[in-house]
Length: 385
Ligand SMILES: Cc1cc2nc3c(=O)[nH]c(=O)nc-3n(C[C@H](O)[C@H](O)[C@H](O)COP(=O)(O)OP(=O)(O)OC[C@H]3O[C@@H](n4cnc5c(N)ncnc54)[C@H](O)[C@@H]3O)c2cc1C
Image (cartoon, rainbow, N blue to C red):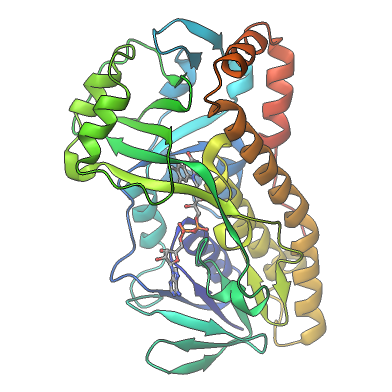
């Protein structure tokens, strides 16, 4: 059973780990010269943690995170620092903030360089299971997993030129070089068309993001000083966090998602996962979590009933596995992508009236309602097959 995974992001690496454990011979093709670390943090909620555990990565993940974030006061603040709403602990559930570099390191360590072929750009994949490299080399597999992100080349085989939608806002991300005291408070601060997020890492450093409305192709002479100008006058420690971050370590990403949900996540011997299948805006902090759920689900289904490695060269079994994967994954991930987009619309509004209304509605939100909405996204367990 030979499986090609295209893309060594969170989705591709975790899928490769699960598929390898299910007995498959896995090769990961990554176009970058090395597995990218990212230079930012990642929120992983209960669903992502369950997926990591299912992939056998629970202890490794625990070793690079801590539970400290769960005891912190979080929620939404106004730029002057007044709380709009504090998130009740029960609605946060399990949450870990991880440095992406740590996550990639623990995922890569499970596979090794003989499995992950860096510097290999896959230019196309076919439904018969062949992948073509940029140098023209063609190779055949029983299954091709397209985990090559929002601009997926593998997706082209299923959905050529599928639209990608710019949200209207872009995000800068950074991690402070050293620990910063947050005074036990974190979360998001929301202004009009701007937001700033604060998330402590296990070692005291702080991951932050700054979001602002702008054209997708906006150019700034200096990213760090642009963030400082846009958020000048916002409550402490926002400026301290930006100042405590190296200018070269602050990167801006235009926030995009798929312009329409894909009608299918599989065709022939190809299956999509992660951003390739359902790239979403990060407003619910779920893109990575959904990629992990995809990976854990695919691994369980491929390993077969009772952990018996299935034979994916048997066409009817392959179809069965991919149909089940689609049933388990498509509606859920697309629903979360849709919600995430709507949340972004609400939190990036520039209208004084709408922002005021939003804040007024958020303030009296009953904790049980907030907890219920969070649980709908975060309560997830891997299939038992
Ligand atoms: C600002 C921001 C904040 C976010 N915050 C969170 C968060 O807090 N929590 C969360 O869960 N998610 C978050 N996300 C979303 C999360 O980053 C993504 O959903 C996740 O990284 C998707 O992983 P992936 O493996 O599917 O794709 P990617 O991470 O995009 O990986 C794709 C890989 O494929 C490789 N590749 C691409 N094309 C080819 C090719 N042709 N051949 C070979 N290799 C190829 C790429 O080099 C890359 O390594 C955030 C996203 C953004 C933009």
